[in-house]
Image (cartoon, one colour):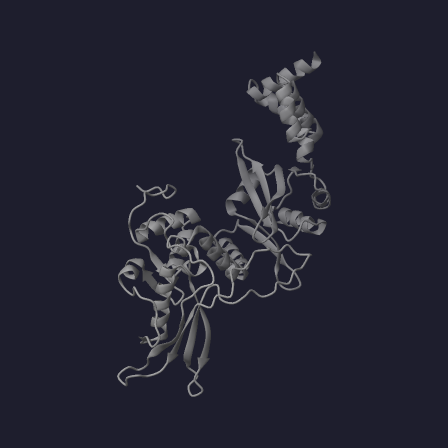
Length: 420
């Protein structure tokens, strides 16, 4: 079995590179063919053939190629002249600096290099439909050329082919990480590690481009999925709002098993929005609770446009409407908008904050436990929470019901230690 997270052993397999003209270049063939530089009146049967030849030459020499100026025929509008330049041709444009924005101050690699080749379409023999001839070739560079082991890091040699794009999307849909995707593709191509024609960052950039391209379809996909779930199971609940521009504003959804769990264990609920969805920059809120085995269960999820009072009022009202009843207790953080929304939409619901329930902050709780031995401080915190919730009578009734349990032992022990 192959571990996709382990580095492979190096071998001597050859590499495949993607050139700027499309298609793949076998480096083994580069060493055995075309071991000469371009020359005047050299002929090619097509523009692509000339481009690939110069691509191979540039790769062996230590630079990359970019397509340059071209002219077209006045008769049919077809290209009849094409220039190919070194990737460091020309000079950078003047950069407009905006002091109010964070901009990268990265130096341009363009240094006015004159190395180039020009080809012109003309016929020498009638038997060929077209012929491209080299009419100009400049071999000198005004910069240092890269050694063979560093040429592959140039951007033009790091293109992802259409076939590789399809494979990357397939592996990503299957749940593989970028690291694992790279490992699988290295094995498929029988290459050494880090010898593919693209790197991890290129895959990240490609996936981000796909997300940006398909981002406007995500909302429709989400709503369509909610409709399908609702048809399949009537206990699936969801509701949403749109703004003036018909864009999704807020959405709350409750899967069927979450709704069933809320009916059984929805007396006490915790709500939190501390997790942020990075790509959409929308707060992600969750309603959670605890079942009879002490396990955390999800009651519902929400994506919100912002964290204002109106937003939380809509969320709390919609949650009660979908779940058919409000919880008896809902625990939240210290956000004033959340507490006000609960007071308006759930007037009979007790709403202590997480800090209020535990009495002290988590940092101070850890510090207190490290300084004091015994369990009095922890039991005091638990008892404080019970008293503040106003469930003391119910608490004692539960202890009488489950007589002899560890919970009663802890409570009795605290009462005894407190009375002393």
